[in-house]
Image 1 (cartoon, rainbow, N blue to C red):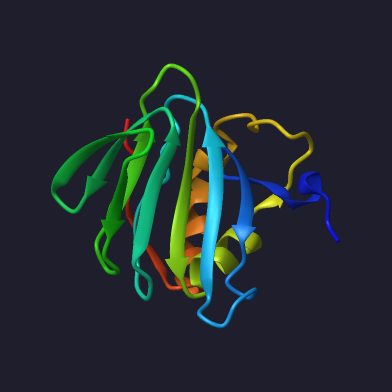
Image 2 (cartoon, helix red, strand yellow):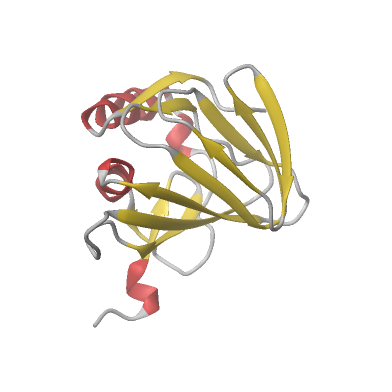
Length: 155
């Protein structure tokens, strides 16, 4: 059995753990928890095969979903339908913590493909994934797992 520390990875600039793997149950439900500092935002992207439930556990977030903007705080959630471009931004001065809940393996497998084991159980250094070379690699890898990166992160 893995210890909790063995389950943490650095995914983009977030400390991430797969709390429930899609492979654990017959319905392929996954729950991925992330923590990141103020200013964290993944590139604008769309999941081709999976709806996403985004729930804030701590902090305040701004989400862009298609052409709509949403502001969420702890306890609030939003359903993002598959195929709809979206991204989020941690806006609270303290770190943000959230979970993503999906049915299917694509996003979980993408996270596993691009993440690296956490060197420490803390939020990783910010910024290395934003280089043009890394964005290109991220975009190409995402496409293999049913995700399309369609624009920049929020600022």
